[in-house]
Image 1 (cartoon, rainbow, N blue to C red):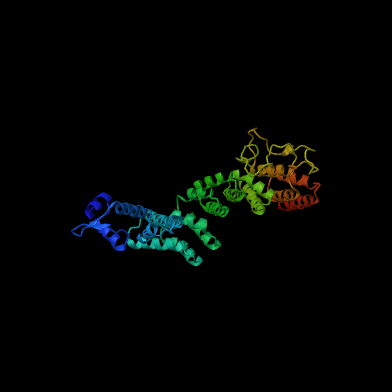
Image 2 (cartoon, helix red, strand yellow):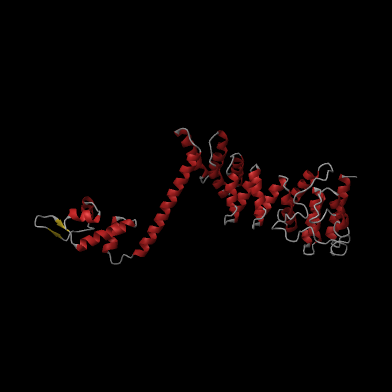
Length: 396
């Protein structure tokens, strides 16, 4: 078969067949009387083998070795090809991501486009200072895609740069809360924590709703960070988790401060402000087993206090009665209920007692009065001291 016929049947051009011959990949088995190349069945078969190997990404030199070297096995070569292909796909994916982010900024000129590209490259720099300057440059009118800021924030380990990134995200507009909420499902715990920390500083109802959802997260760090953020926003659904944090010793000082802030913000001028999320509303956190407010608390039910914690008869209304509960009293009631739980450890009871210090209202006051006679000397002394402080602050 002459070269033209081979080209038609194989789909390989005559020029490429001559190239294969010049490299020694294919050698026509014979010549016609006129000197034309003549390809036989074995030659045709070899051409198809070459094309098959080219389809896998092998170079012509590698193809030559594969076909002519008996000791050349495919296993190692295929593994190398897999690695090369993955690297190529990663590079192409990164390029696509960069192009999409550039497109999202809608540059009006090449100067604008180049400024965005430079900023995106700086965000990925190994230098902390360069990354921080890149973030701060967004204040100078260089548009930064929200996706790029979120990605950088989730991977940032330097405290100052991370803070700058969260500041930039808070100014970036829409899109951030959804992206950060998605990162709360990341397998790496440090990524989840960075996500909730960034989410905590974003303004708006969307961010608040995502933080509310995070209260049910399986990761206690995520739940805690969300509860602290919601506490500063005056969201009462955070109360059960904040109480659990105090009891468990997880950022307990910050959690107690958040509870006090919630109590003071919602207390109002004695107007009985209703508190959604108070005792009996069913807003129980996944992290707060044992802190239910409907547990019995009559005299003698719990051995911890001489006067049953807060005296249950004076506590805000129980579950299901629909009575509006003052915010401060509702928070105090949750703390009291956790104090009264026999499973609560002594160290936890000490922290819960301290948390009552800055909770205004009659329930906290009565609870501290009862705890002055607690059988645990540390709790008794703490309650006595705190009660004295409350008297100095509020002589009434």
